[in-house]
Image (cartoon, rainbow, N blue to C red):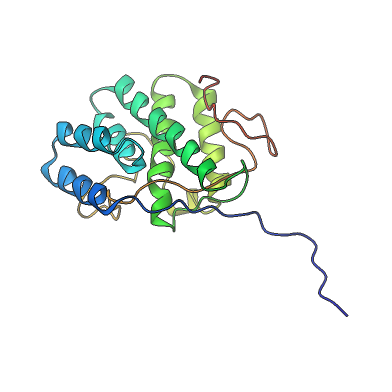
Length: 191
């Protein structure tokens, strides 16, 4: 008698690690608490998702629109990176893999900032997408509340290493997809 399989687990994508130099530069920028140093890291390594997440988190308290733009940039670059890693719009992208954290932080920042600018539908789509990508997301205290980092702050004592880069694959539905099984890279219905 053979094993009976009723279904397979969703695929999981893990992004490749960021260049060591980028990780080091971001850690130094975080230590210096210099926004221009964070900008320099993103400019030198524009595919380094943790840099975009860090910029969004740093700007969140003072420049909501700028922070939203940084988060959206990290999110869209993350989708590109996921596709490049073989993601096809469904499956897991879990926080437990450090290389996925830049993408997840960007998406979480996009969620918070969408709420701050009154885009409640986008905020909800991002929230659902986060839970689809990593079913343990909310139980880890990542979601909920507003403010810089919403439990995902960077720097010493926060439990988040700002050097952790990009994200891994996904979900059965992305923000803006309208439901399971359909993926979209447009949380706000925008490009």
